Structure formats: structure tokens, C-alpha cells
Image 1 (cartoon, rainbow, N blue to C red):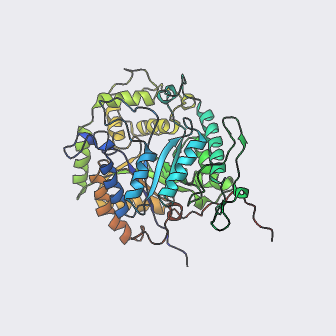
Image 2: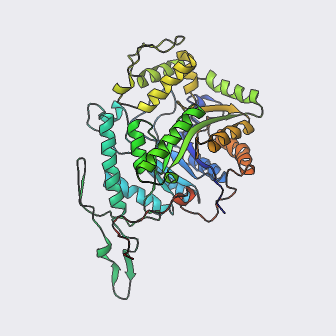
Image 3: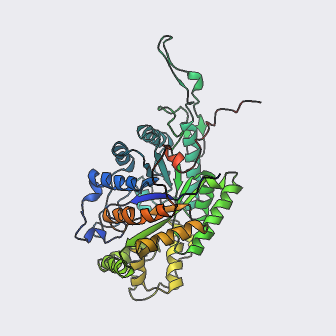
Amino acid sequence: MSTPRHLHLNAFLMNTGHHEASWRLPESDPYAHVELAHYVELARIAERGTFDSLFLADGPQLWSNLAQRPAGALEPLTLLTALATATEHIGLIATASTSYNSPYNLARKFASLDIISGGRAGWNIVTTAGAEAARNFGLDAEPAHAERYARAAEFLDVSLKLWDSWEDDAIVADKAAGVWGDDAKIHPPRHQGTYFSVQGALNVPRSPQGYPLLVQAGSSEDGKTFAARYAEAVFTAQQTLADAQAFYADLKSRTAAAGRDPEHIKVLPGIVPVLGSTEAEARANEQVLEDHIVYTHGVDRLEHLLQLESGTLELDAQLPADLPPEDVIEGAKSRYTLVVELARRERLTVRQLIGRLGGGRGHLTFAGTPEQVADAIEEWFTRGAADGFNIMPAVLPSGLGLFVDHVVPILRARGLLRTEYGPRRTLRERYGLPRPANQYLQPALV
């Protein structure tokens, strides 16, 4: 008898909420983004909802201008290590860049988090778009899109070698013989490549999961090729069921073509739920947030995304017809395409587009009753568009609490979501993934 298919839910935590105006609400704490207690509360709410994991975005630069919304963020691996001690079950996924880190240090940090958390670590792998980050690391401009992904692929290959550089039973701990470990079970990578030279074994043992759950969020052609080769969960953004179905089918097909089991990659679109006891109340709650948007900030952000000169966009006009073509965009290619297609498809003015992007920056925003939100989630899940969802509450902590208290019970009643965590303890087990074999060990001949 087959095991019923359950949703995978990830809580995407962003300071006071994903809506850019959430910090302006009377209930919001403008300083919450640097308060550990805030994140502990959110993690425990998500754990009460039996979420598989929580996720922290990050980048090596100061985002936006300080007037727009709470800026700056605690370093995610440090924060998640603290959350590991405040939670028991939920997975802990940190964003870290392959463009502005070195494999040895980052592999060690993730292995350490996996050990400290008892096998709950995940890595959201990003290549980091934007000249602002590049200039923080001695570069005049960001590397080209294709080069960032080539570096990312080598970064992952080196990291995998490092995580496998200890065999699982390398520690002998034979007190009587005076032998703590077996050097024969250590495998230095001795890697010499285009971007990295790494010789020695990792200085931390192989972790409970073997290596962290590998997550990726790029939806460009390079991003999808990378995901098909490495990723085990993919965070993505689609506005329509049809677009989500097409992305899902394409990525599963690419994963099979790469020689991997398509069931070993989980697709989690983002959704920004805005809840109300009636649809009218939900719409009113959404309007309150939109009324707090400062549109000058939105114009600046949109011009930056579309690589337009300041002052190009007019609030009550549609996007210019002569936008830069996608093939010259070196930044966030997939988000550029999503935003332009949304604006063109619905013939939105710049003001309307900013309102639509204010909640989720291109992710699906859904205002409705708990039953309507559950219906939307079920439809995408059962019609080949998603293996689960990246839940992105517009306001935190209240939005996450409302989702857990009112949507989660409906999903459980429909048999779509677990009612308890059960015996599976590692993040990989929660995502239905096997523990990876050590690449240095050859299977025994039969």
C-alpha cells in the first residue's frame, strides 16, 4: 500500500512580513528583524503547524534604501544555530552565495549546523545578482550570469567532496588501543579547478544527513539546468496555475534527463496568503497593506529591476514598450521576465504593478478565506504544479499564526498535511529523500 502524498510546507521568514509596508502597521515591531525572540516565536509557530522547514533569505549587501522597510539582517547560519536550540523538529534552511564565499568555510559551517541541529540543515544556493554585492568584494561589476552558474557548479562539486571527506565510521574511539580515528577513512578532495583549489579534508566529521538539503531558487535557463543537476528542493515564483504546471513538468523532465529521480526534487512555489473570515474581509486586509505603500520607493525598486534610468517610469502609465531584452539582463533574469509578463498580460499601470509586487515581489498573492487559500493550495498540489509551498506571510508574526491556526487544520482534514512529525527526524527524511552515499566508497562487488 503506497504512502499518501503530503504537502511540503516551508515558512519563508522575512522581518515583519513579506509585504513591504508590513512594518508600518500598528501591530508591527520595526526592530523585529534583529531580535532573536521574534524568530524563535516564528519558528515555534511553524513547528506547531508541522512545517517541514523554515527559510531565511540573505545577500552580502544592504538591500534597498533605509526609508523603504527594515533593512539589514542577522547572518542566517548564526541565527539558525540559535533556532536549532529553540526547536526540535523543523528544518533550518539558510541562504548563502557561491559567488562571495569559499567552499571550505561554507561547507564547514553547514556541516556544523547539521550536527548541532541533529540533521535539520538546508542550504539555499544562490549566485547573487547585482553590482552592489560585487563592489563589496573588490569587483567593479557583477560576474556574467553564465559565469556565476559555472562557478556555482564547481563550488557544489567541491562542497560535496568536502562533506564526503570523512567516512561515516572514521571515528573509532578505541580507548583501550589508544586509537581515536582511522586515517584511511579520510579522503582529501585534492581539487584543482577553474575557480577553486582545495586540497585538504574538512575539519568536521560527516554530518547526520551526509550533507544539508540542497535548495535552489533560480528559474532562468541556467538556474533550471543547475537545479536539475543538484537541487533537492526548488523555491520558485509563478503567477498562474498554467505557468506553475509548465515549470513543474519542465524541471521534473530536466531532472530525469540528468540521471536523477524526479521524485528527489521538490518544487515549492511561493504564496503570500492574506486571510480574512470572509473574502471581503481578506480583500480589506490586503487593501490596508496596499494603502501603506510608499510608491516612490516602489518606482525606484522597479526601475532597478528593469535596468532603467531613474525617472523613466510614470506611475499611471504602463511599462515602456522598449524595455531591455531579457538576453542582456545579467541580474535576476527569471524575476525580470515574471514581472514584465505580469504587467503586459494584465495591462497594469506602474502603480498597479507596484501594488501587485508589494506583497511578494512576484510571488502569488492570494487574499481569501482559509477555505479559499486551502482550495488554491490543493489545486496546485493535485494538478501537477507543486509538491508543496513556500508560505510567505504578508505580516509577521500574525500572518503565520493565522495560517497555522486556520489553514493548516483544513489541509490536515483533507489528508494533505501531516498531523504530527512522527519518527522521521532529519530534514531529508521529511522531504522523502534518501541519505546520500559517500562518493568515495565503492559498492561491494557481488
